[in-house]
Image (cartoon, rainbow, N blue to C red; front, side, top):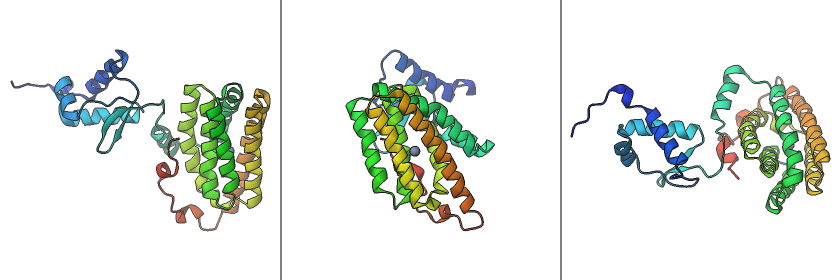
Length: 256
Ligand SMILES: [Zn+2]
């Protein structure tokens, strides 16, 4: 049988709609593997390149993830891909002040919720990052990785998947902004920062939402001030970021 397709019928939107219907009907659940490309192409009635375009769009939305050699899977956790925000940051030049302001709006509330809701496992995850922060005070890049992971762990402990995925998304862009100047952090600033993270953790552990809120707010305000210092101290000198081997932020920040 020959199938004449008008261009309008062969569109990636059909692939997206198809997957959406399977999800809505409960036929695809988090963690499930999608059919192979060629089967999808036959089932939907589009070409394989179109299936590929559709899957790429779904991956950009954070709905599926392709694992090399294993196939395409529905994502297990709600994670918003940070690529759109990174693009917008590059296009419109988000300032660091805007970034810290957005983080305070999200994370101060997340810390308060974490104090109310963190499970024992989540509490452990947060405390591990505190230990990692104190262990990496002589390595500013490693410190930054654990810093961001601490914030993600707190957001996850908020028990609100929307807040957690927004923090995930923002944290990648924030990490990109910070790592360029992280080398210039002074030992004293890192010690202070580690101490402030510990205060947030202690408030969460003692189930005190108001204290958690206050500690997180103060931490992000101070952290912004330290970063401004690092930016300032770097003017006119060679950028440490240029010599940083850690150029692939995704390998630096594995999903936890
Ligand atoms: Zn921090």
